[in-house]
Length: 439
Image (tube, rainbow, N blue to C red; front, side):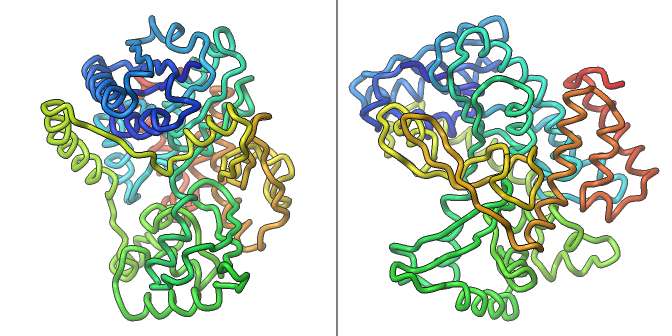
């Protein structure tokens, strides 16, 4: 078996996913092909993964490395599974640009990797690279499954599913821990074990539609009560999503700092007090990147010096998906797939996040039916900006980029159309080295 990791210089994530595979009997003897365009990061990942292979896997796995575009096809050749975890343009300069140029126009962001003008620009930079991956895969591993972890999840995965022949599913960390952390935070400890839930919507805004304890009792009445009380009496890190529970009736999968910028409600220049009222961390992602870069420098030295690194299997979906496909033993995930009637009141071409069954036949999405109307409306406000961005990437028509920015809920609520056009033009110029030529 061959498992190829695109963006293997994402060392911590590569360590988790490939380390998980080395903890899995049906995967631990695979060839792990590491691909990146950064020689130093690739070498660091190779050293760490070889140490894990030695320490926990008796060197059963084979680890190979491939550097740069000239070796990309060889990295993919014959792969059974391909894991994608790339970030085109990096923190510097591209993420910094995605924050600083909009800020000049009065548009403030928190994360800017999934929605908003930052998410749009990240998608436009990344889709051409993923299209090149798909072209190579269609030639050298046409039957492989692509497990996409890169953001903006719905735009990248949706493009791959509609405009390439590659079997693709989008995977996110937020589904697995959604209800666990909610119940933990609300001190409903006795309801965690044995809970049952249904989650569906779109990536980073999938809804906890139903949650019950092990005896089948509905937990939402108590959740709604406690969440409202907590927002009223204290500042905490999840105030936006708790406000969702109060105003929309339901909790969603991804964090409050993310969801603060997915709508027109919370980050508003006319109401600056809301930033403090809802404890919204503006410019959070750049701070996080700086801390991660500094933290990795220290962590890397410790790992490389002692060579004693070990690993225990995490809850990351990737190894469980591969195991289920290889062995035929079924496993349930929350996956990002084309809608195609899975959620009745969202567009068919939308990339939605729904329960999926994984087994020897692959990944089979489950029909959900209709979302509550207010939740479908929230999802739709993001979906159409996503679809317009995908159209821009597929056609290279610049007008679709302007339209995507106009339809983005936060951008459209804050800026007039003239400034939206000017901001898009300035961003396209700043990112031109990472973009194709738009008409």
